[in-house]
Image (cartoon, rainbow, N blue to C red):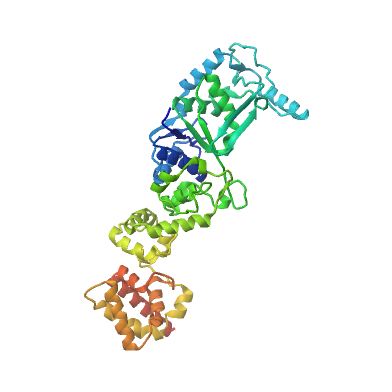
Length: 470
């Protein structure tokens, strides 16, 4: 088959972790660059742990990241007939067999092998006996060749060789009748005409088993590419303690999807020294052969840097739309989107996430401003009463309302009182925002509007007056 067909096959036993998201991304980009197909398969054969809400969360995360799929989602739980037919075929051709060894007997065999210093694998008690179906519980095992080698050329790792004698007779059907992972993926990959299997290198040890099953069933073996795992800064398996979360959590924390995509693709893949890529660029330049052999190291600071870059580059109206659900959770609803975009412009330069932007711009969304205690003590004092009062009067008398007119007010008042802007900027900033750190004072006044600005100055003047009375 000339057309590239890849698949992403998550298990719905939890949210989409960033390792899984990167695997999906590498598959999706390979399909998009080659004009192939990206198939989504849900491996939900773990009946106890699989949940519909996790399936929905995975689909939602992929959509949020911009990874559209061409076929699917297909659910393994609805394909039992296909698996059983393949198992029956292997049994009839004596390439698989029924094993009636009990769990207790298997445990005893394992312990005995370990005492002898041998690898604890199934000893083949039921192999080659062509045992008929009986009422007692049994499993079906694949009859692995006892000699020879299984080899393949991995697109990332190069040539890999396994001794068949090191592999035991894999269970392909459990005693409860359910098929096992290594068997279902072979049947599914063939049924879906998968040409390339791109997955984490924690699956390498599964690959020779799957290749032997492909061959036993008479199926074509796909091309494999095992990408390195993602490690934490201590070069240990990535976990939450390294700051690694699910894509859902990153979304809730206010990271932009393009920032997460850009970050994930660079964890183990490079294109020269380039750090920042648009989706369209990635679809043109990404190749599996450029994936490195070494594990990528997760760096939360790098992700924050990228997120800040994309926030600064984004259209303010788009950021405003993305902010709305975050603000709604905080009780700020029915915000005018056009006004919010104006507020965004003043916050974009410094915010690294949308949540940080919401925090920084809190003073825009509520009039219940709490003064920082140290800032109020330092700046809201009697000497600023006169300039704040005059600025308030001139602002309230303005017929127009824009940053230029607002700046002109300041210039007139400061010149009249023979003051520098620094003498009133911080007191006014505290009056308007409650803190000494904020966007430019003219921009804040412009976005807040005349009524809210004059009310906040009045409140600050009353606060100063009350301090004098005390």
